[in-house]
Length: 180
Image (tube, rainbow, N blue to C red):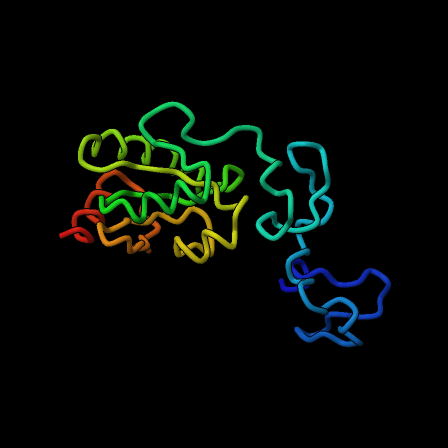
């Protein structure tokens, strides 16, 4: 029930009775407190203690022990300038903004690599870590969450892939439709 999923102060100042909260909730429902809850006290892989889910915490990018798409056909965009060059190149490309600690990014690793292999010679397929340059990827690559797959059209427009289906077939269909 709700009292098991919402962190209620243990000092008894607020109680959950008949599906309602009784007491002064301001001390524990202030701005941004909703991000804590179930993550408080859990350990990161580096041994530090979580205070939030991860995406909102500076330094979250250092809590995963490996990068994604290290060897293979997916090319790395290491700088913002390199990413802007892709957008202004006049050639179509696919750019995925990701975070290596993000389970959704991790889950698509194999299919995205297969996709990159399947379109080799037609399009370049890139990756760009978004957790290290959040403002840039929000502004230039439609990114508010990870992973975000974009097709870069020849005019430099980034078109976001909005589906949760992350298969070679789905990526191919989206690219073909976007560039038709």
